[in-house]
Image 1 (cartoon, rainbow, N blue to C red):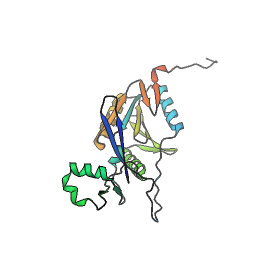
Image 2 (image 1 turned 90 degrees about the horizontal axis):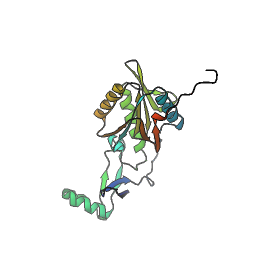
Image 3 (image 1 turned 45 degrees about the horizontal axis):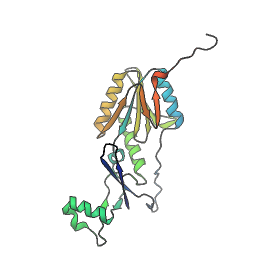
Image 4 (image 1 turned 180 degrees about the vertical axis):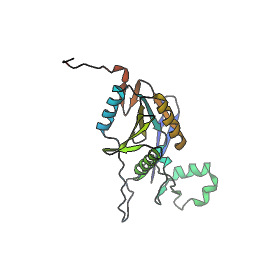
Length: 216
């Protein structure tokens, strides 16, 4: 089944998102791993400490509609309710012959729709494959931390679902990594600077203070 969420934005726009209701979704005789990793809290704070200490250029990249970048690997159908089916047929009249007797449309998913149990895993696999193709290597202690040495400098990417934290001492390296990511994904929202919001935290890299030891 499907669920439609509506939200009235502050600027007056109405935002809608159609997702699958993955709660009743069942796997018949499959041992597929549908879990998806995210960066651990330790990885997030350790890399933030490195970013501040090395005075790295930090960029936060949000991949919009991230899950829909990944293709669905299994045959999954989603059912729209009567009202949504009627609205969709109004927009696409040629779909009228596919309307079922219960006045509902059933759609075959080609992309990993939000709400499906395997969608997060499919997107992680796509993103990890993309970063590896770009020359990054996953950290052996955390599959959501990737590193690459570029022009003798380490560039680090931390993955938390569809939010990426990209950092390097060189701003040019960060620029080039973002440009390369934009070749793979439809739309990225980029935020940069010394004051950033990341995973609900307010980061201020200007607040870094270095303390010398008592012996010094």
